[in-house]
Amino acid sequence: MAEKRTPIPIGEAVSRVMEYAEEGAAALIPIEESFGRVLAEDLTADHDVPAFDRSPYDGFAIRAEDTQSKLPAVLEVAGEIGAGSVYPHTAKPDQAVRIMTGAAIPEGFDAVVMIELVKEHTKNEKKYIEVSRSYSKGDNLSFRGEDAKKGQILAGKGTFVDPGVTALLATFGYQEVPVASRPSVGVIATGSELLDPEAPLEPGKIRNSNAYMLLSQIRRAGADPVYFGKVADDFEACFQTISRALKETDMLITTGGVSVGDYDYLPDIYKNLGANVLFNKVAMRPGSVTTVAEKDGKLLFGLSGNPSACYVGFELFARPVIRRTMGNPFPHLKRIKAILGADFKKANPFTRLVRGRLKYGEGGTVSAVPAGFNKSSSVSSLAAADVFILLPGGTRGYEKGMTVDALLVGGETGSGWPWENILPSYR
Ligand SMILES: Nc1nc2c(c(=O)[nH]1)N[C@H]1C(S)=C(S)[C@@H](COP(=O)(O)OP(=O)(O)OC[C@H]3O[C@@H](n4cnc5c(N)ncnc54)[C@H](O)[C@@H]3O)O[C@H]1N2
Ligand code: MOO
Ligand SMILES: [Mg+2]
Image (cartoon, rainbow, N blue to C red; front, side):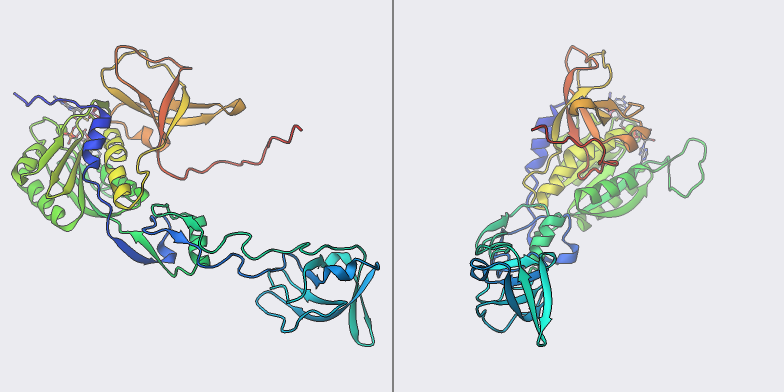
């Protein structure tokens, strides 16, 4: 008789796995490659930003006091500078300097007049401007340190490096960025039925979609995948490939062969490897057969062969380990509340993770509707899913309109044309 497995709750399974997620050593990488990594150190401002008072406009640097007695004030244009240049003299009374956006305010000047607001004329080969209103000290200046102060922590250790963080890194001179190193994650697909994507279909065979799905899930999680190919359902072949892959990578993901079938060899392979099985049944659907084992501190994720189960198993168990290893203090999928968009009247003892799609309705309501064919074997629903609708197991079903929890899949989801009907002020 096939072994009897004991399902454990999802949370319990995730925490067993997370015990083996250790932050990788810090590494220095070029700033150009830093997107998606995680800072291994605090990013501290080592100078003020801006580092000098500067002009926010194309215009004229003036002394405010020269505009405070007689108007229009007629000021001599004593020089001109663009961004990047420094005016070498100090201001004298009734002088102005033609200055462009971003240029340092010359010494002794304390306000800027926009170029559109002055009249210019030349007299005896000298240039003059007429300023028709009075200015106060500091008018139209960008002040040193107004954006960031020296010593301020602008992004802490553990911050995900997004484009905004990259801008800070460049601002503070990080040609090389200290980040937690990325794990290398091996992928092996098992199954005698598997064909490569380029192969024509044959009776009884299917194309190996899980391997390519996993490579892309690993990349989305931020790690480096290493693909060891597909292996037939043959104990020796699987054992050899898995042993080799385990030596060459930091963690290993297999798909298929993990259940109780005649050709499901993963359970025996864990035994032969002397690996410690953390669990081999989770109270969830899909993905109840998800198995995770540990060998010398390295994790072996035995994900289901069924595409939806494999997908969910990766996102719930492998992804947070990868993210934590990469230094991310928030490695799990984000949870939101949404209105359930369909009935699930039949009770299920296991927690269901329905691949769903968010719909944004009037008044900002968010509902989650099933993304398609909802069996564990489904591949079609995955392409449309941006959320896992969480329906905890029990004796009751769920009805359309109920508020439920959902996990956001992936990170940076885009949106369509966002510029219609933007709410105006109602003050
Ligand atoms: N008697 C029982 N049978 C099954 C049980 C059970 O508890 N008792 N569990 C079922 C559940 S739940 C699942 S999920 C599957 C898991 O099976 P395995 O993880 O062992 O995977 P396989 O048997 O190798 O394949 C299952 C299914 O997936 C297809 N597959 C496999 N690899 C790929 C791939 N790389 N790309 C696309 N599709 C793949 C494979 O052809 C099978 O159709 O077991 C149930 N059975
Ligand atoms: O592991 Mo299975 O996915 O529950 O259908
Ligand atoms: Mg099987």
